[in-house]
Image 1 (cartoon, rainbow, N blue to C red):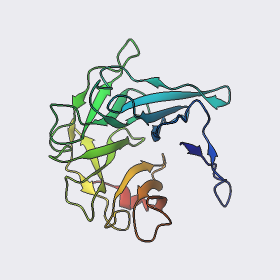
Image 2 (image 1 turned 135 degrees about the horizontal axis):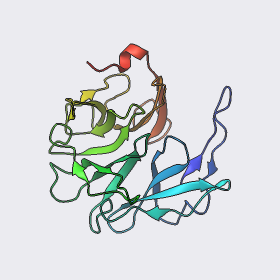
Image 3 (image 1 turned 45 degrees about the horizontal axis):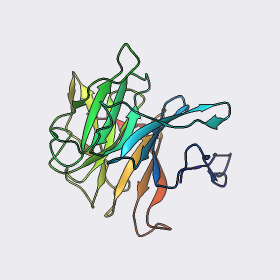
Image 4 (image 1 turned 180 degrees about the vertical axis):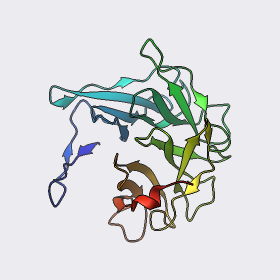
Length: 225
């Protein structure tokens, strides 16, 4: 199920369920939230696995609706999605045919009709012969974070970033230790001021199989040459 916790002055509040509109008998996963905090992107196990959105209205999350056929392939899995801060580009991961490996990252542009258009594969600089998952596009609209086991890693899956420069993605950069560990690290999210990152990790110091961590960045640590 999906839970919500609010951060106070010194601590996070006790988690509460996100509501009956979100949580169903099957598994559901929050993959991202829009920059204005009003739209959730949710993975449900429909078909091969699809992405839905839920809008926050009248004090609660509304019943989710599936993204269109350009995003959700009828027989393959779309495991995560996020939208740029301006709402014009949707980045998502899918194992549909025609990719570079297992799961690839794609981008779709918002059309004049208010619908997502036919997606484009981000190409072999980003997508390897293995898996690239859980894309997150930062508030600047040009820095992409994702996790992968196809680029050089410290463990099973590591978190990487790449920047869009003159229409091309730079070679993915491993965020390195202490963000990445010998286990699985992923589902990265960066605050708009670029000072705080949140991510999931499976490491020996954790309290369970996979825990949520936060990390504080120095400004210079976020710059990409």
